[in-house]
Image (cartoon, rainbow, N blue to C red; front, side, top):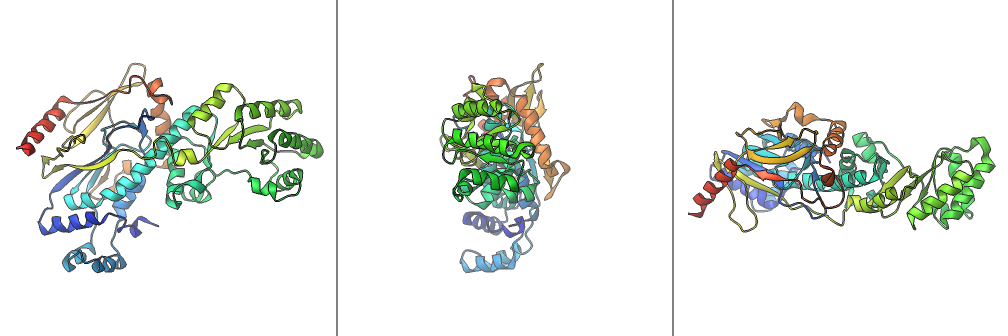
Length: 446
């Protein structure tokens, strides 16, 4: 579905608040921050992702006649409000951290500045897209880091939570450095390289495993052959026999092992292939992989040409959700916050500065008021003005992928690693911003 079809992809209360703002004549600018309150224990950083879909929705969201007809049946909305929705457009500005940027807790991933009702309506869709894509991109970045340069392939779309999740996950993985995907629609949609081998069911459909190998190799001479349907080592030995049988016509590029002790089976398979003069035939591993199992294989020193990673990357069990929030931090030029325990809000417009050391590595981040100037690189850039994307809001997927590669490389080694960083990467709130928070708290506490 295009963004134009998704005006009703929102919580009911967003529309009810939008109508009430209009009834009360409240149309001054509101500033909304989207950020993560705390990092999961298993994450040293997050990789910002999902901005492109967020901007596409803001740029093109429209209420169709069928949408308005449906809203009329709910009994919640006045006729004059529904008439106004016929011409609704998002007219605000957005500042955001570009996709592929490592981010930390309490740092705005994006900041929406718009008439308060417009900013309010954006909450649901923006949270939905940025939350999921940031969560899975952050997991994929860990897998790519653990693979130490060995290509990673997205293999998990069948177990991801729906078609939209599978598409957006493939894109997010690409930002994080994953090499290719099995998802053909994602390949068409985003221009991502597609990859795939064969399934156990194909081998099972033949009376003889060797006949299955012969048939697939006839169709795809340079394929990767799945060898663990029955017995992995016997499967490799059969592939060696097929190489002898075919002679110079044998062009199989690799074997895939999908189960068992992947390190030991890879080692034994490598010995068999090398002894047969098949050093060029690579080993591709899959089956329940995550960053820790990938790191185990890499540490073993066994030669592996690729990892197929699926469910645990697209539905990460260690951090399936992020503590993400979308909060009003300013209205009519005045800072706003909540006084709820455990959920502090930093009021007003902001900038985040990343200090870079003499060695080129990131040293710390400072969350500051927008009008402050600090040493380091400002992370938030204007990606939308007056409801239309700026040049910074039209970056390509390749741009985001390159940024992720470059910027994660600048993180301190412990932060970039997959084990908990001690100490964590430092993020400080500036004194002037804390002063603003204190003054606003005092005003609303009276």
